[in-house]
Image (cartoon, rainbow, N blue to C red; front, side):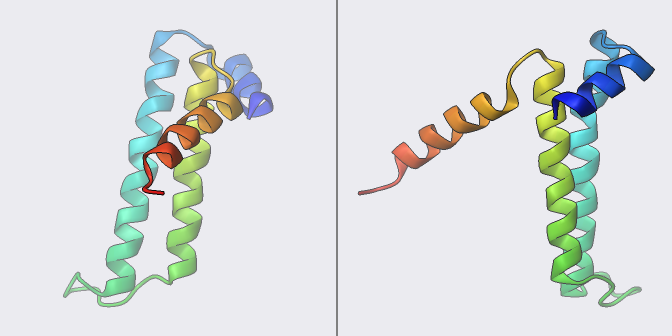
Length: 95
């Protein structure tokens, strides 16, 4: 992710506005994943079934990548933040 953030910083800057846009990108991608899931389930009566589960998985991967870029853009190591968060979640599971 560091390479992506470096490229973004070089081409778009790395100030608070750019950090905001990168955080908002996570929400945009989550919306695309939700839209794809609606397409899998056919819940839009005008459109019916329009997506596959694989397309949902791809959109969810976009959410993850966008989140990792946002974390790095805030100056944190995304691998470390993700590992620490995963450890907290796993610690909550019943044993």
